[in-house]
Image 1: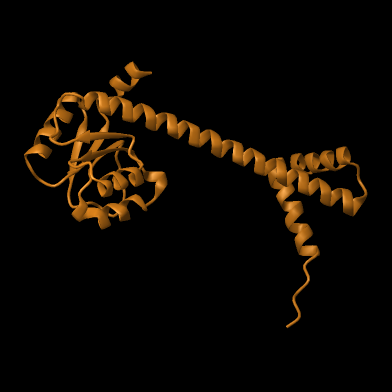
Image 2: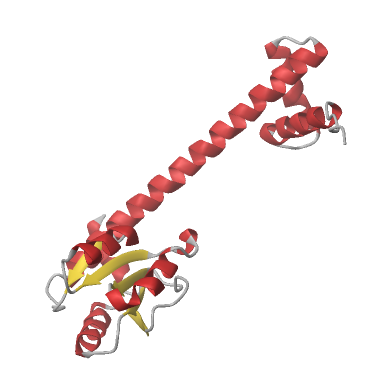
Length: 201
C-alpha cells in the first residue's frame, strides 16, 4: 500500500495554508519536486479547499480563522497535516482539535516531508475506509429496524405471523420495484397517518 501511495503522491492536489515567508517558498518548492500540484492560500480560508492534502500552519493569531475552517463541511475535509513552530499547550490543543494525521515542525526541512505525506495519506485513507464501512453498517441496521417495525405493524393490524408479514413486505416491494427498506418505511408512515390524533386546541 505504501508503494501505491508514493506513486499517488505525484499528481495530488496539495494546498499550503501558510503565511508568506522563506519557509513557505521552500516547502512549496519541495512539494513540487515530489510531483504534487501545489496551491498557496493565506489568510486561512473559511472552508476546506478542493484538495487531496492540506498543510496548515497552526498560527495562534489565526486561531479564530482556523477554528472556523475546522467547523466547515466535514465531508469536504482533505488529508490534513499541521505545521507547528511551538510545542506549547495552546498550540498542541489546536493541533489535536484539527484532527491532523501528521505534523511537520518548523523550521521546515525537506528531509522527512515525503515520509509525513505518505503516512498522513495512508492514515487518512484508512480512516475514510472505516468511516464508509461504519456508514454502510448504520444504513443496514436502520433498514433492518424499519423492516422489523413494519412487520410488527402488519402483525398487529392484520393478524399475520412474522414470516407472513415479512413476505407481505417483500411482495409489495417487488410489485412496486422498491427496496424492502423503502416499502417498510412507507408502511410505517401510512400507519402513523392512520393513527394520527390531532391535539386538542
